[in-house]
Amino acid sequence: MRDKILILDFGSQYTQLIARRVREMGVYSEIQPFHYDLKRILADPPAGIILSGGPASTLAAGAPRVDKKLFAAGIPVLGICYGMQLLTRMLGGRVQRSAQREYGQAQLDILAASPLFAGVRDRSTVWMSHGDSVAALAPGYAATARSADGAIAAIEHRTSRIFAVQFHPEVAHTQEGKKILANFLFAICDAPRAWSMKNFIAEETAKLRAQCRGKRVVLGVSGGVDSTTLAVLTRRALGDKASAIFVNNGLLRLNEEREVLDSLRRRLGLNVTYIDASRRFLAALGGVASPERKRKIIGRTFIDVFYAGLKDFDFLIQGTLYPDVIESNPVQGPSQTIKTHHNRVREVQRLEKQGRIIEPFRFLFKDEVREVARLLKIPADILNRHPFPGPGLAVRVLGAVTPAKLEVLKQADDIFIAELKSSGCYDRVWQAFAVLLPVRSVGVMGDERAYGQVVALRAVTSSDGMTADWAALPPEVLDAAARRIVRRIRAVNRVVYDVTSKPPATIEWE
Image (tube, rainbow, N blue to C red; front, side, top):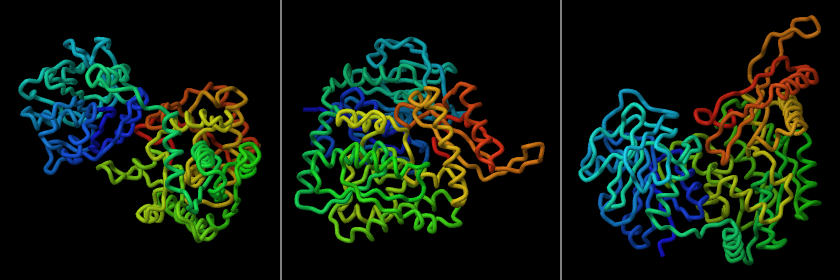
């Protein structure tokens, strides 16, 4: 049965978000590279195929392409951004460089009735991100929508069931995006609703039992939602046969090591070994200012600590998520590296090549993991904790990390989070934290000139972490946090608030 949507990746940072949106609607999605063999596609034909966007230009030599026979296979196709330009060029249309790159919100005007736009408003806001545009349609294709400036924004060949849009329906900024994707999935592809986190738990539990039977298994836990959920799922599958290890890397939030151990051991009943390697991590990070180097050092040191504690194991289970894989430049497509995640460093990749890494969540997004946690009955206060980066506060101390800087940041972050919780704002934002900037600011404290450090506060709203808007926190909450930080932390004399969305920024500063 054609029970999946195949997404061919041309390098868009939104490729995994397309997959997330499809699964959100109850349809299984699978990402493969743009050059995925057509014979393999036809051997197990999907309900539909989505061609992702990408950073390349179809006009460039060596631009990514698919097998042209794909468009004659009788499988419904939806081209997004680069995908629309690609199928236009390959099928006889013309693409040209735009006089001005179109990036951000734009107006979509629907020109003609289309099964892709059934129930969609005639005029709505969409998210554009492209430098090329379709100048002339391929034979047999019709334009079904334009942007406010007259550029072609959607095309179709209805009898071939091939559709394409110049905008990104998968991002939250496209107002009718979910409806457009739903039309493709159900009205055009007739895809079944068979994907759920309940089914995922059952399938992954069975996989873990089969793969790890009689094996020595190590699981790293940090106290975050991802690793905690994975630990509970692993215990469900393997009982106490897996060794759960909590490594204190010295880069945790204020008093976090005590809180994490209490949650894991007492509240969740997990058998956890505690390793305090904080001095080792901080020594390894001494004098290092580069964000990429810090991440790689932390990843390498983490693996070294595991090797030192357990020299003999068969599998290392870790809570890698889809965004970690994509942003670290996955092998499946041409996506560009945004940043190297600590659990995707060379040492981990070496274990992966040896077949010793298990990542049950590598194709899940944060909100899907939260749903798994809910189904596993993990307490709400643990489940709803804000995401925390694997490298910890090392990527929130901009520049070289020192114990003194960490202490300042821990105090500032604790004050900010406390204000959010007391005001009722904590559960209304996706993530919030403080950042210690590598600059000093002139101020006046106690009638004397002060030359102190600067703390930036960051809070964002999001559904999946792949796109995010800065949170419009009440001024009185920001004021209370800033006043308490400056009053209680002598080294700080200025607090600023980050009002940048993702994109163009990432949520973390490093």
